[in-house]
Image (cartoon, rainbow, N blue to C red; front, side, top):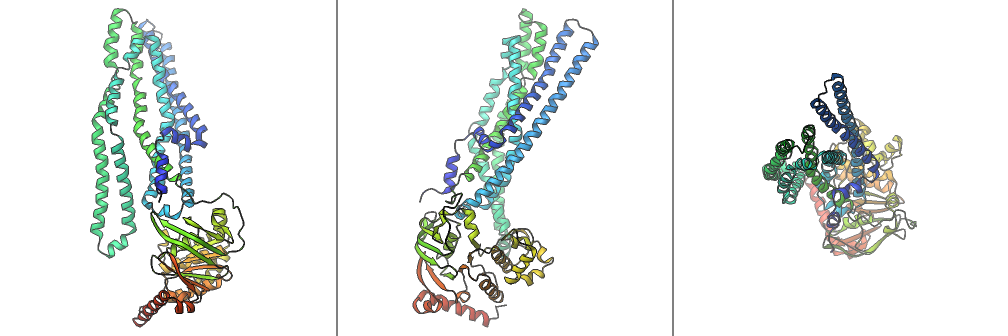
Length: 597
């Protein structure tokens, strides 16, 4: 197959500069950043005025001025401009921070919306730790760079430029001498940035590995403890942490000498200006008061340049982060129009010649299947046969590779995601609940539902009684991913949420896998009652729960092996008969061994 969506996104993000990314992501914030830059420049101009006033005071003093009031006035003027410099810098920084916070919020919102539009396979093939790292830590890490670099980088280049032009006006020789340390500083920085990409990429990769390992370690802690793998699992996490720390220390160790030299050499402008300026004074080619003025100004010439150059590392990091964000935002999405091109006529679903694969492996091969409106269709088959893949394709979590899926005669790719989502309710075997109350988790099926309607659906779906036994009833917070509830309880609330949506097409992907036999029977009875008149697609690992289905489809190795009613398949399908015998045998053993409890 062609390269993955993730690789395509990364390819599209290559070669872009920091300015390209800022221009792209800050499109709606350009005006605010521009105002911030203007305020920063005004602040810089105010901050360098005291240098000129100081030079003027020294010149007047050398010329014999002894009027105390003159110096007091000029000193006060210096103080005023120092305060104004601080004020404008503060205003610039506040504005840039507010703008950056809004920009980051926009990026995170855009990333969340993007994930909702991506095929499920694209999301699943990306480690959750990597996505979480990009959306939270990595995105947050660009705040300082955007808030300071955008206004201050420009301003810190403006200040030395103005000073240099003024020095050229006094004496061009001294102006050039004031930059004598700059070539050596640049050489040191070039040495520091030599082969910069390799160690920087290593730190990014080891950080991602550490995040993924930490998420895996924490998420699997129950299994780790149960199987006595704490030592080996922690050792893997420790190795990832050590490698991450080593990547940073190696990078810093290689950079510390050239960086320290550059920071030591750059501000030492007096090494050239002081002796050679004195020679020019003695030769009579430079006035003494101009010499003093140049000494004062040269001390403040390089510092802003150093500040601007110090942002180069932050710019490199921000560029890398923007590249990661851009790689996610440019991933291929599900092929759906903004507005539906047709209106479905009913809720019948038809799969025609559907082929689909994960990566290079095709798992569905030319599936032809009709799911009649208002009927119950069950998918059964061995593990890995493709049942759940069919359900996810019908739920529009992926796009088909070849063939088509229609709802009411309309291809799913002709319907907008919003319109189709209103037509289908999907409950998977991995029932996910949000960290809010039971009431709000059910209400997510229909946000405008009243408390009475939520409770009515809970009664109809058979979970009212156990909800009322919780500490705060419907107002009980279920915890992250529903951690405060059992697997069966989570499933029952998920089904109630799907019932609340009242969609014409209902998909249950092994949604009763965690329920015990007693509760499963209750759930099946509730589903049968609430799904009356709806198109129901069910995947069940317990065949006894779908014996009354209008149509049972046997899936094997990505193909339709047989279809019919329970009785018909027992007569005509050896595979189904074998599965039913295995199921009946397992159920009998469970009952005899007293395991049903």
